[in-house]
Length: 507
Ligand SMILES: [Zn+2]
Image (cartoon, rainbow, N blue to C red):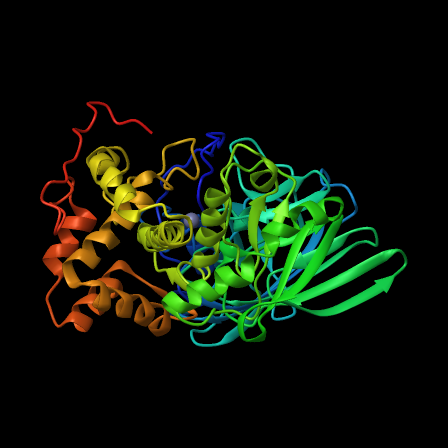
């Protein structure tokens, strides 16, 4: 996600830290003599509570006790983007502990029913969680299927931002970092990636495109049902569903990669010159880091004012105006396209283990954005790095060092996306290249995306790989560059200076 410079329009929701009691286990319940009175007392002493997996920045996200293997999302769109969609979310998961109830993240929409393994289950809300109590407790290490019938409301509640994006002609989705659970019940953390099938029924006049490739299209009674499936695991934050009066334009990328772009039907001719750039951009990135990691790619140009672009898996979301506003230089627009494209490797295929690892997403995407501008538009990377170096202490003071970002600002939901994790993190990669040399750095980049393809990885994993590859203990280097309050001296550029940090942090 790069924030487009023309905006500051996000009004994120207020977050509060909540306690994270461990779920009451089945063994505990079974250990009691199972009198109705005892179970009743136990239930009363442990009321349903919101849970999380301990993410430092978003402590309420994700849930303990299970690992999701697949989501089947089923939405019915009426043709109005101000009315709730009817939805059925089916989750197949394996339990990792005994559970007499389990939590899903879900914060916006009405729940009509929940089934667990085909049997009706009790449910209640706790904070941003949906707490489900199955008829029979679930044992550790078993498969379970949870089906939630619910609505999915595209109109945001107060203090809630993200999830569905209402466009001029329908809907798109922007779930990063913590908004997938405003759309559907899920284990909303990138450390629990899963397979997705997305099925949407909409009036015939609409075109629906979602992550992955189409697997079915059926028409009945004035409606069309579109089904898409991903071929690689995906984080919930990367879900994309576009419903609009769209044209879908097909072309072929390197080694036969199917590319499909989604644009407002009336603008297809005007936008074509931009769309035509994608195959060469993919080929360029493949020459740097290796083969494109997914089954398809494309650009979704939405008629919406989001204030950012977003690397939703296989189909990146852009504001259409980015391409039609004459004030933006061509090289800049292209470098933003490359930023989102490079996230398909860095962020999507290799997802952050926790949100404090987001510098690995944004630092790399900014790196390739800058490298592309250098190679294709003669915008020297070193000049931008020197400017970033100058600002780096101020960015660290305002947002925290790259790998230990400050908590989201209350009321500003996506405020973890600060300069410190963009240009500030690209600067760390530049320092690393200065330190270990271009050849080792380029090998590291290729190895990183190959070793962690379709997985999640942490800052410690990156440090370890760099140390293993170079045969050096780089822990001191990374500690200073990733966690230091002050920016260390730049290897090879002793003349580079940081400007003093302002007394009061600014955004
Ligand atoms: Zn980004």
